Image (cartoon, rainbow, N blue to C red; front, side, top):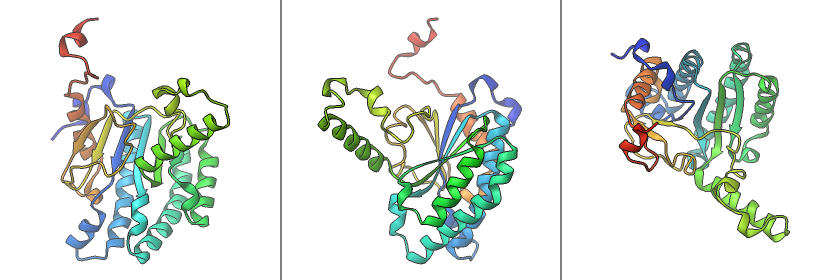
Amino acid sequence: MISQDQLDQTKIPQHIAIIMDGNGRWAKLHGKARVYGHHKGVESVRSVVEACTELGVKYLTLYAFSTENWKRPEQEVIALMELLVRTIRKETPELNTKNVRIRTIGDGHSLPKTCIDELNEAKQLTEKNTGLNLILALSYSGRWEIANAAKEIAKQVQEKKLNVDAIDEKLFEQYLNTKDIPDPELLIRTSGEYRISNYLLWQSAYSEFYFTKTLWPDFDKQELINAIYDYQNRERRFGKISEQLEVK
């Protein structure tokens, strides 16, 4: 077992993104309804947020609800939205005392009004906090985000507010939901699936991926430490070769 003391405190990733997968399978294994797994998953969110705060992680982005999740059975979607509202209402005061700032990315307009209102209140309450940025990806998908950015840029060009020749990677990033958020160094997916499911497609270009068979309701601080330790033992070259990294 990897202990926290074995982590290199100078190499803690600034931004960790997580695909929280396996709630439904966890519930099935325990003879419960899928919604029960989502409720247990909230406990893992709490554990990971606390761990990130303790370890000094600055940004934690959680894939809470994708645009594709709207296709799930209606009753499950309704239950998820109700759980989201209750969880935000219950957890925000505690997060606020811990200096955590709540933020969101995704097509927020597609969420139920109760969710929008609860999220706006939570974001307003915590907007001045300077600790961990907890970013909830809600009604989000990478393709949606990129297409939306392209549409906004095209509109600017059409209105002659932007020259086509000015469009480059840096400018494009300013039209993404994450324009003021650094790219994740580490992207974790639970439950044993080996794909990123339309999550942070632009931002994860140079992320280190960590896949674990652990189902999300069983993911805790120790699991996070394992992922960070694995990340710290990789060589991040960004297109260079090892010898170039050794030159100071």
